[in-house]
Image (cartoon, rainbow, N blue to C red; front, side, top):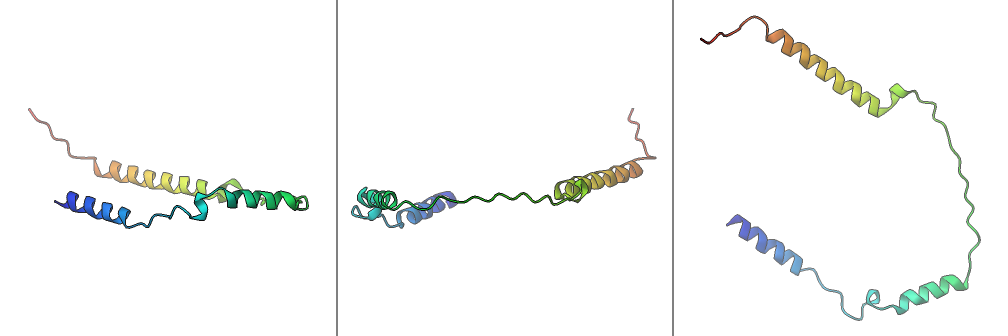
Length: 95
């Protein structure tokens, strides 16, 4: 019953989206051609690209990836110590 209700509600939500009318500017090619013509008619100045690379000088152990790897490794090590200390003395022998 819930599946049918959710399906009907999803269908109603999709159908409630208004459709664009056929004379909408996105449906005609003329505005796109006008934009292209306007851009070709007035050439702009060439773009000036200035690339600067700044070295941060951070060490590898300051990287968040390595901090996450170290934290996960520490948690695994603590869990191994806990499991080793709890599982020691009692052994069940079934005959």
